[in-house]
Image 1 (cartoon, rainbow, N blue to C red):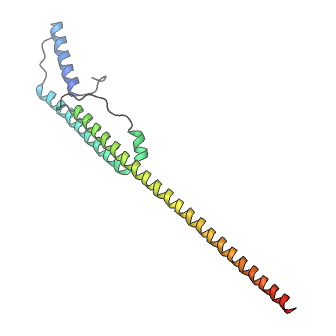
Image 2: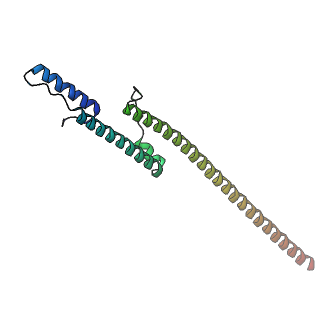
Image 3: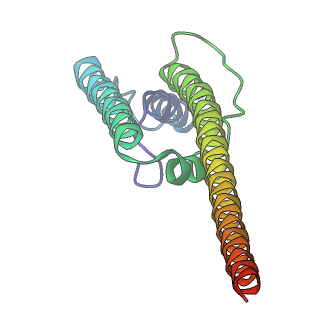
Length: 167
């Protein structure tokens, strides 16, 4: 009992082993297991497994809401490879739920990546526009400077011409 986890399957196997062992030895009187105690242990195991599944679902939901996509993404990279068997099996249901979560996480990751690309493109476009405005502003300043220099040269030429005319 101490070597194995207490699951419904393990309890059934243990029950079968005890009965087979008793029949093989023949010396010991046949002990019928108390069905009520077995049912209570099975229900406890079932309740514990349901509680652990529910707590796992709650933890995963909390993680999804609290953790950013990139850090959570690295912890959830492996996909469950188990084949789904009986639909009534709790583990099959858990695995199916896990696979659905994985698919949703991949979809959300793709959406986040697209949004990040759009933001990056907008930022780069904004930077290009800013640079073009700066270049345009520098050209205008240079043109204004050149115009002012020409006016000053023309003014100096006029004054020089006036001096020569007055002499």
